[in-house]
Image 1 (cartoon, rainbow, N blue to C red):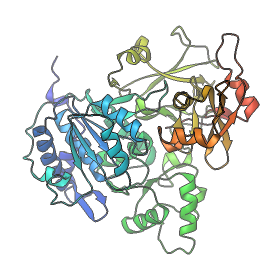
Image 2 (image 1 turned 180 degrees about the vertical axis):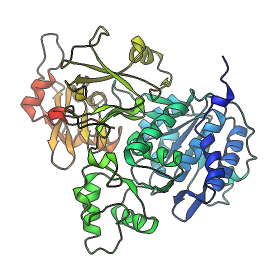
Image 3 (image 1 turned 120 degrees about the horizontal axis):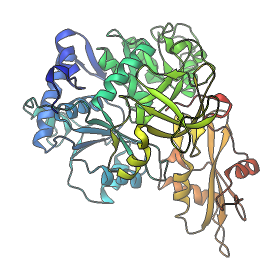
Image 4 (image 1 turned 180 degrees about the horizontal axis):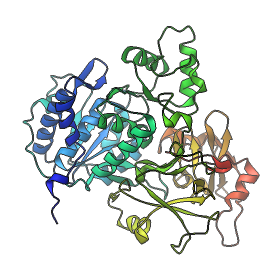
Length: 521
């Protein structure tokens, strides 16, 4: 059945409305570039026209291989206008990991960056072949092979019907099964989550969000999107740097930001003499007192009770501590647009207070994983999205996150699945068996440690050799910080590695969820 056009709202349609309703509001700021909503709308029109000529249509993918830029939002809006999908990739990945993404996604257009990551991108291209159009974005406006020239050459794209339930944004999840999957999120999912995040963080058309956290992370992107949705201003920094953050907050009077605690500590040191006015972001001279990476106005619900539970597949958080009365459960209560239940292995709801799998349904749930029909069937069984995480319903109705069913290591804002690091280490000829654990780290929450069984009869590999092996093949933050060689790994009666025993013997611990810590991505 065709949708009644009176009921259709797509992600890009808001841009047209902002251009009419907020003609003087600045939409994006990036270095010396700044565009109002009417100017951004005109650029998106031309970009969509050029993408269409390049072969991008409904369901096709556009890949971003770069750091933060206003062009991520611009490309998303242009893709939305065509019914296509944008994927912002993790620029910190190795060349082999980027090659996997290129081959898996099969993009029609790739927009890439030279500064800082040119060598990695070049190596990724050399590892395979593809038919995509490659456009460098950080070049001169007159470069005929560059992004700006490509955009300028476009004629405004003709209006076309787009189903708001179709995918518009793809984000690769952490490798919970050894390889990453791209979660495809719909127009509707983003729009619903925008309203929830806007309420939690007190976002309006007067808000100014500092985009310094990585835009390939849903945790950062949800506020970018909500700021756009409400007609506010998104300020982009290529990557996080304490001094640049201070300058941007001072100059643009930022009201919101995504800043991890180590960065906030650096900001305190940089601005010890008060040379920068940070009062638009923090209401007190010492920013370290803020408990959450997402910095919001002091009177927002989020500041009073930050955190919750979620994952990329549900556009970030699906439960919030910020809403309603204080909760017993560390993850709070479901958002106004989510249903959350705790299921047993048979798909039935477990009794109050018992642990089971967290399952979710509602408009923010992913459309599916890109080309992963088997995973879709498994995770979507029974009409619920199965998160693969364990939780518990408390007597007051709130939710506690217990831990991932597949163990997860949390290093600062990064999620690291042991299965992925183990798979990498097993490709080393000197490794017979391996178990990767997280060990508590005062600064980064956890550090990665590999417990390795060397191949019998051969010279055992050194710790540095194994760490370098991982550094060359997976993102640097995933590599083990320490390696310990053992003769054998403990196993359960069923023959699988006993991870609890490995933790106990080698200092593992501090996993997310232990002690009631909320889990949020």
